Image (cartoon, rainbow, N blue to C red):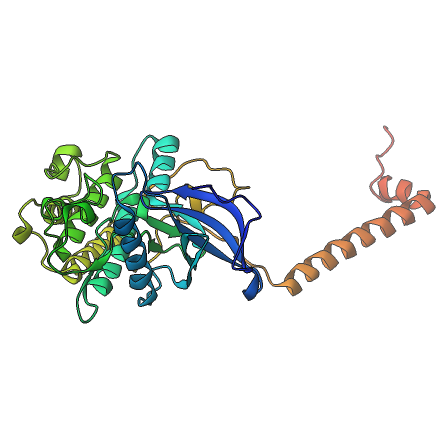
Length: 365
């Protein structure tokens, strides 16, 4: 299947401006929607399954399911679907374009510039938001929607809102039985064992979120099915943080959090405590320390730390500034007048420096 070129127009509406990436079941392009004042969209195209070990019917079914799932979802942490269409034997989904970087990119930047993985406060900040998104998905009616591929590459940090957005719903579908191995695997390292063997459960998404958090904190891709305790990977890790990460990544599905809401509550409490530890006596904030990707391109980045305090310069009222300037000008004017007077009356200068009358030295006898 020929790749779309920059400038290609689909449906007399969507103009391709760039190729973003090619995934397991689709290619994603950046495009503008001419019908809505050149609104930017992400255009996902179903790829030819030849050579991928998946038949066309299976791939097409997944693609349609992704479109159907996303169309019915309304959450700030999930991309909005605008349109679905077919053209020249290809199928497309036009969805909200998220400006930002995925968490695996942000993690690489931290490691590159600091030789350290993502700070705990920031990792928990993003994990909490994803847990809230999973809570929304898992409580849909008539049945829960499972994402099945939660991982750093599928979590994008929105550049405008600095919030996490969960993307790539290619494996998402309702939580029902009868799912085959070919449609339930996800990504090894993040996929729980029961999901790989075709028995996915909402707690499988929780396992993937725990594996994602483990990855962000350690800087290492988690091993499949048996993720080591966080304290083994990071001996000096916070005990409560380690407990919450290990809770989600247990191989025994019954030992994990039994709902995304329960895990979100635990992460929220942890975040409050981490914020208080970093800022004694200050209230908790929803904003993370800005990662490299959050800083303007013109800024000079010196270091990335767990906490960043920005001190704004004091604002001086404009009237005070004007009064100060006028005072300086007045003083300079007085000095200039005095100098001019002394130049015009040199006698005054000599007389001022002479010995006063009555104090002249007496002649010697």
